[in-house]
Each structure stands twice: as C-alpha cells, then as structure tokens.
Image (cartoon, rainbow, N blue to C red; front, side, top):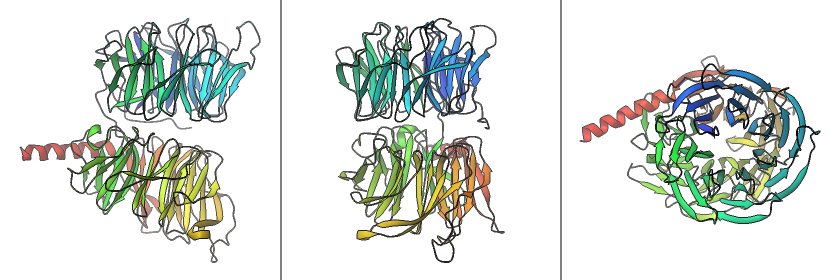
Length: 639
C-alpha cells in the first residue's frame, strides 16, 4: 500500500479536515484529514492556533481520540485499516506506541474505555471491536451493524454506543477490565434513516444521536426517547455536548453548526460555507469543527463568535463535466473552473474564486447543457449558472446532499444521499417529480436516451425512467460510478475493487436489458470512477481507484456482440497518482479527462501508436491561481 504524497502546507492540512478532537483541557486539538495526516494544534490561544505535531497514516484519517487517563496518548483511525496510538507530549518529540492492525476494513471512529487501556474501534465492515492497547490484542467484538458502522461513544460508566448506516443504535457494556470481555448488547433502537453521529452527555444520562433525516434524538441509556429535535432539512451529521451538559452542538450538511438547549430550543446557528461539520468537538467553552479548507474552525460556544478559521481553500476535484469545448471542474472550494479541452486556458465560471460565489459550499456534482452549468451541493441544493455570469438560481432544498446530476429527456435529474431521484425544471429548478428511490445514496447518474443509469450504495446499477427502473446488475459492495457509451455498453465502479461492463439491448416497454456482463479486475482498493472510450464493439474501459492507480481494459465482445467469454479480465496500470482518483469525463471518443484528490488533472487517450496512456496533466491549484489572477485583472480593468 502506497502512502499519500501531497504537497505540504505549513499553515495546516493539504486536504479537507475530516475530524476534530479536543484534549480534555482544551489546550490541544487533533485534526484529521484526507491528506493522510493528523495535526496536533496548540489551542491555548484559540484566536491563534498553532500546528505543533504532524502524525502520518498511509490513507485518509477518519478520527482521533485523546486518552481519558493519560492525556498525552492519542488514538488515530485511518482508511489504511489501522489504528495507531501515539504519545504526544507537550514538550519533546512524539512517538508511536502501538498499531492495531488486524482490521478488515476502513476504521471510521475510535473511543477509549474509562480505564484508559481499552479502545473501541468501529469500521466500514459494520463491526465494533474492543482492543487492549497495552498489548495490541483484539479482545472481542461487541456489536455488529448491517451496514457501515459510523461512530462510537463511550459514557463515563463504560456504556458503549455505536451507530450505523443501517439505522441502528446499539448500546452495550463490555464489562470491567478484570472480567473476560463479552458481546453484550443491552439495548437497540432502529431508525428508517442512516444514523452517523452519537455522543454521550458528560454525566452519561443522555445519548444524542444524529439522523440523516435532519433530526437529533436524545435517548436514555436504555434508548428510550426523551426528545426529538428538528435541526435541518439536510442530514444532521455530528454532535458534541457542552461541559455542563446544558446544551449541545450539532453539525449538519447545510454547512452550519446548530446550538440547542436541553428543551430542544435552538440557541443559535452559525453558517460558513467553508465548514465541513461531519465532526464537532467542545471543551472549556470552545467549539471546533472540520472544514473543506486547510484547518479547523474555532468558535466561542457562548456567543457563536468565530475565534479562528482556516486561511486557504483546497481545490480537490469532486466532479467533471463537458460543456461544448469546455471541460468543467468542480472543486471542494466551491469553485468551478472551465478549461478548453486542449488545455490552452483555465478560467473561473463564477468569479471571483470563492466557494460561496458559485455555490454555498463544495461542488459535489456537475451537469451542463444549453449553455447552463448545474452544481449539486452538500447543503442539498442545485445551483444553476446561465450563459451569462449574472444568471444564477438555486433550487429548493432537496433534503440531502446531491452527489449526482444528469440532464435527460428535457429535465435535470438529481440523485441524493438519501436515495431519492428528483426531477427538476432545467431553467427554474423547480421540483417537478420524484421517482422510485434507491435503497442508498445515489452516487452516480448517466443519461441513457430519455432515461438514465443510476448507481447507488445499495450495490445496484439500474436503468430506465424515474418510475420504471430495471436493475441491471449488482456489485458486492456500494457502487461509486456508472457510465455508458453509445447506448450499447455500460460500466460501473465499486467499492468491491471491481469494474463491471455490460452489453445493453432494447427491453420491454421501451426500456433496456443487459445481455452480458463482464467483471474487470486490477485495483487493490475501492474503485471510485469509470469511463468508456472508443467503439462500443471494442471499448476501452478506464477506472480510477483509491489505490492511486488509473487502469485500462480493452474489451472485445466478439463478432456477434455478446458472444465473448464472460471471464474475469485483468487491467493494465496506465498511470499512478499521489492520492485516490476522484472522477472522470469523456472529452471525445479518444480522450478522457481524469482527476485525483492530489490536485492533478490528466487527459488520457490513445497515442499515435494506439496505446492508451496519459497524454497531458495539470495541477488544479495552479489552474485555480491562474483563474484568480484573470479575475483580479478583469476587475481591475473594469474599475
């Protein structure tokens, strides 16, 4: 497994901040990032936080937790399937104490037991496991979820709460260190929506859980509901309690922090497009939150006043689309760049280069047509920019982040985190129709005739209209992307490390069916994006993976279209990036644009000898700076 190699940033992280964790005294803050690092900040003066120590994993870091009995011990959890325990003293060098490495999947969160020796780890495989950090031994499994286990919190009395995408909340008590660990679940509660955050109050009397339907429930240790608090029209993602347990802070995907008292009354809301509130932390009157920029946000809990904030945007690419001769590039910063397909110039679609100028927060998805550009956002809106820069409109809230968009049949279709397929008027952005939902987040859409293909975390690739959809095939894990070529071939990329490619044929009632499916191998980790080039009879399949590799397969269906052997096929490594690959878009039948979270944009295609290879590459940060200079010069000339 290669380690992430991103350009260092002396003032913070080189990618978005995924998690924040205060030490109990509030004088140190650990921040985790997509860049594979943990930074420990001196927050003694919260208006001037100073990064002191950098800790490294090989993949993105999802969480950190300070030890309750030894304040210098810090546990960090990573997508490299390890948990590391570090000693981080106030003075002197940090050192690695132990690594818990027998995990089978990405670790999403960690929490210490009150004894300061045992650690709970929860992961993408749905398991919650108990470890002895002094020996590195796996002691027991203490809970199992039917989908990704997302968060864990331990009360002062040793009750362990876990939550997951299966909508289950489980509370168990592993027992004291002197007794053999047991798989003891004292209570469970089930929700129709995913539950991704939880936190015990300091007294242990209440458990707050955050729901994807935008609400927070306050529960007793027996999981009896005390109160439901409506937070947002989008998912509530993270929660933390004030020191005195009289209030709690909720991070929601509307880009806001919401503070409530125990009666459920909203005390205040703090909105900032730079916020990524998938993680919040509190200590000694301070609030910390994650960010799409290069560092944490620090606020005063009593007033909501900003004490310090990150100083540099990140331009990680989440989406690509093509509009005429322009390649559109949607970034974490909210910037959308337009670059001609020959790479002669780059410019900002919505000047100036600021996140809130194109859309309120990161660009999750893009679509383009009839001179307009559409962006899906974390806040659950679609933003439209018309052919003229002054034309800007925003859809109503769709209830969840919008990771996928496509134009088809004269309307714009949006796929959401909660599995909905929603049709909007492409001019007014009014919601016109809601279709048959998936059983999980709709990660990708691709126009197919007057209908579309869809790929979702329910492992399914489907085709058809809003209300008449046919499953084409399933993967062994969530499906990240889907695409099609000429209406005859479709391909999908999955977290199960495979790509599937299938032949399409006319089906019943004007629909489609699949006549043959092949499974393509090569990547060692989740496959994030997929594209098709060339002739549908013998297409080139390109796919980008979290293992940093861009792979190619040349598929030959045979003379009779579908007469080929349905065998496993091994891909060829075309290029290696310094981080996972994020998205791709077909420029023409011979060329594909490919982007990685390392800030690299490449064009891949056949060279003069017919070999598929990387033809040219750019640095997104440099393109963004070039666009910013152009904007500033235009503003200067305009007066």
